[in-house]
Image (cartoon, rainbow, N blue to C red; front, side, top):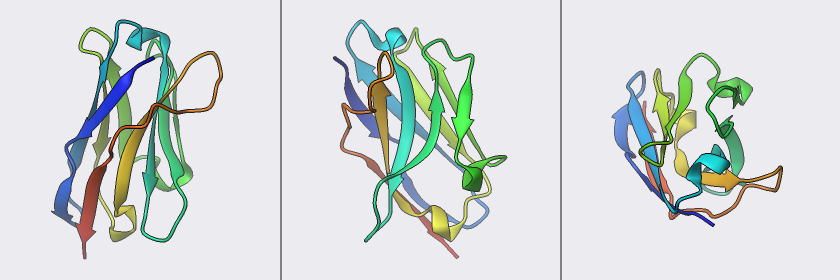
Length: 118
């Protein structure tokens, strides 16, 4: 298993940018597909973006396409989420999760708060 720690959140004005990082412990990080999810107050956790284990395929929810970019560095056991053109509706706690062999994403970290002011 991997243990995940998210960082990089903060308060930013609409139109601004943030880069989130998710550091993983464990020697098998490169075997996992990785995803970013978010949970706004009063809402369920939702999928944001995912990247396969070797970084060759990425997936995004429609609301972030063209604004967010997911990437990974397997040598550093880290996955990133570059967020540009942020909107107030992007405000949420962002979590990264890991999936192996098609299992549901899990191994959640503590999350990092992103707040976008209008």
